[in-house]
Amino acid sequence: MKKVIALVTAAAFAAPLVSLAAISNVSDVGTFVITTINNVLVPVLFAVAFIVFLYGAFEVFIIGAQNEEVKEKGKNLMLWGLIGFFVMVSIWGLVNILLGTVVFGNSTGPSSVPGTGTHIGS
Image (cartoon, rainbow, N blue to C red; front, top):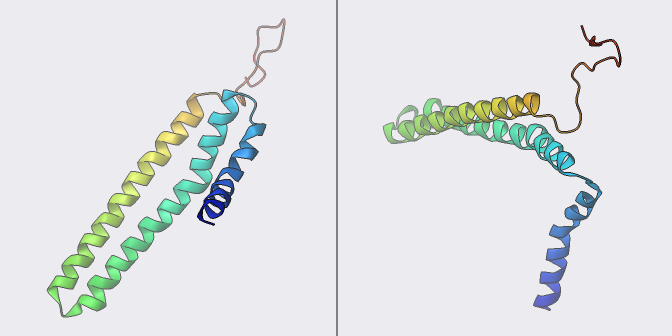
């Protein structure tokens, strides 16, 4: 029975990999990874950092109004929430710099008009 549960669990975790079989080249993989980071991971981590910061503020101002130990714990949580914001903004900026400088097959820059030597975007 344990083998069946392990097999079903492995199949459930491997199911998303089947959809990755449609990726035809390396540039599609790069675009998929960067898009996933930008659209899923970054907002979730921003939300976690914001919740940690709010909970720390709640501990400092509401719960720890009379207790210095709880206030200190809340201050530490607020600090870690701010550090989380800083790290996430940094990573988000680096990903967007990477997205803007490395072309993964979806070039949006100006293209040349054949035979004229001029660019369409200029």
